[in-house]
Image (cartoon, rainbow, N blue to C red; front, side, top):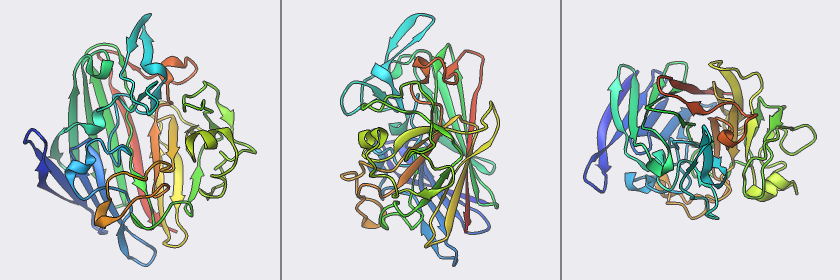
Length: 351
């Protein structure tokens, strides 16, 4: 496995932005940037060996700042939504930045969040390691937090993403990867003809402001049922509340069989025409499926492509949204002396 590093550009305060290229012995190539500790490209073969970049992204590093869709990056300190931007630790309430489009809730760590920060980066053996120090009070979060993301590509065509965090005092943390896949190749139409299977018999209903209600509902006999696998576009226009509210799929599913530190299959995404498939494994309890319902108007993509709505699908393995305010959801509090540790694996193959 080969890793190369180069300077890709500079931040507004003249710090070098690095681009890392990982290539395995099968020719699978992954590019990473230290803006948001993010994935810039993933090149994999189709069933005929034709190589193509299968993730959405941008041609220039400055396009990744405040891009809206959070393409490929690591949102945090808490991915997804927190209702009203409020939560409590030992009866003390904390107010986070409010940055959803309606100005009512907290999304992906705030207006800047981890995704729009330059992370420190280095090569460590066969991994690329990104590190970010989040100050006490940043975006309203209590305690100083050190976050690390390790990316490793192996010859089984697996991209292993490992998240670690340590805190100076009690806080909340929820890290994920926000890559958008299009297995036909980025910019090559929509993902409505992709087949998705989720290892999840329950999903989290949400309000019209996309805040989870606390219920874990069965997917049976609803458009939210992906247990047997189906085309993403089959039911996406059904008059179902969660689809109407999100203008498509933008919901979290509860992964079956999940347990602390246990690696479980979360999802399989495939495209019949190209034969490409990606399987997702994770230690996280949930997977947010976002079908790129609001991609129109984002920066121009790689190779000059204009991304329209549904041009990519993000499969975000993570803690359950608004967990700090939902006692029945798995714990997301991190205490001093504890280690936050989660894993996501993308395994690429063909059908």
